[in-house]
Length: 89
Image (tube, rainbow, N blue to C red; front, side, top):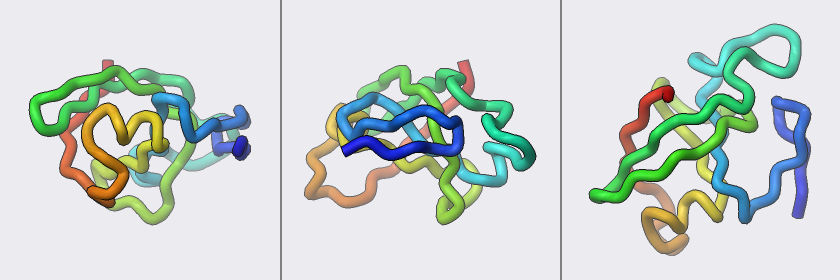
């Protein structure tokens, strides 16, 4: 199912994209300053380049909310939550 994110682009759960915590995403007019910026995300020895397409008000500092497509690059959806590190590219 498609939903419209804070970057004003439809988000598909199969996409390799993320929502960035609101503290780092920024506030102000949409789209935000980090919209469509790519980040390198690493978890459990696997790295992938993902695209910021939304904000995540419920995420803590450095927190991300991954689409199902992005999440399954690192773990089964059954894992629920995983630890990741990431950097802006």
